[in-house]
Amino acid sequence: MKWSDINAIAEALYDTHPDIDPLTVRFTDLHNWVVELDGFDDDHTRGGEKVLEAIQMAWIDEAR
Image 1 (cartoon, one colour):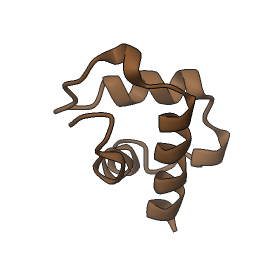
Image 2: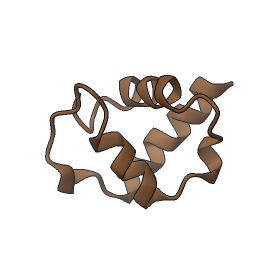
Image 3: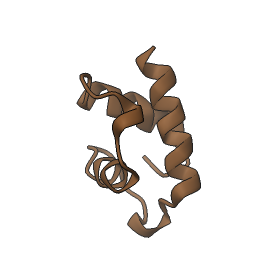
Image 4: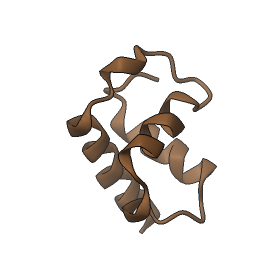
């Protein structure tokens, strides 16, 4: 997975953290969780706020 794989990341986060409300996750934690996902293989420094917001919104949609 790359940072651009927003929906795949959101699905993986939902599967990995099913009891977490995505709205309560700090971006620093979200960044760490993304880079720790199995299959994530991208530059860790590229996960900026805009990308993290998109991932968080996709995760919220996935959790509904």
